[in-house]
Length: 247
Image (tube, rainbow, N blue to C red; front, side, top):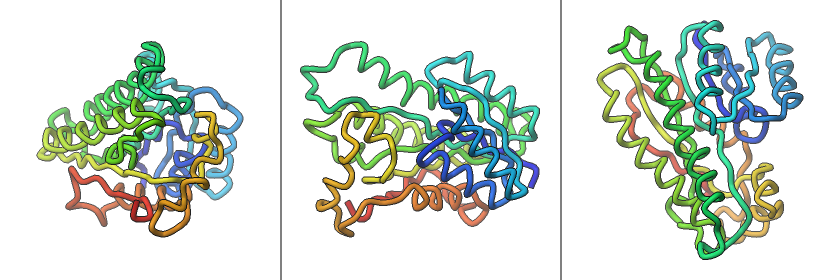
């Protein structure tokens, strides 16, 4: 396979696992990372060590300029075949009345606007309407979009609810142009994102509320993503897959 998969937030957690899984299935992987250059290049080295092809490009998805640079770099790596909109943030546990406008703007800019801009660039390259060969977009949502995350981070939940709606709408918009648009809603997953929100033990503490009585792994989410990217999911678009242990 000579087609490229762009994976935002690919230096750690679900993004890293997805990059490794995609490379193992023959994708050429272009990893976007916000700041951890060493981690991103470690993923590239691991892929290349397994005879895969990968590159890393610094990209803060809050910046349209960075997004344009990411896709320009991917253009030089091969024809775009997939986008995984994985980059995202959470913030400290809080009630809405204690959230600042700056926090809300950051949340929506990174989690929503960044994903829309990345998808825009992918559509411009993959749509048969623009001379492309088709492709797949997988958007990372969250079980929080269904649960609301009261008393925790309703802003994060709202941003992921927006991703769900966007996934459905864009899927219909480009279905006849060779592009499938799908989503994955992870539940409580053992990744570093909880630590970045100030509560590193959150997933394990709440695992008693999961019917399967455990947290999920980044690899389990990655396996769902790469299946949606594959031809095995060729009749799947507009669907959002819950990978949440039943929660």
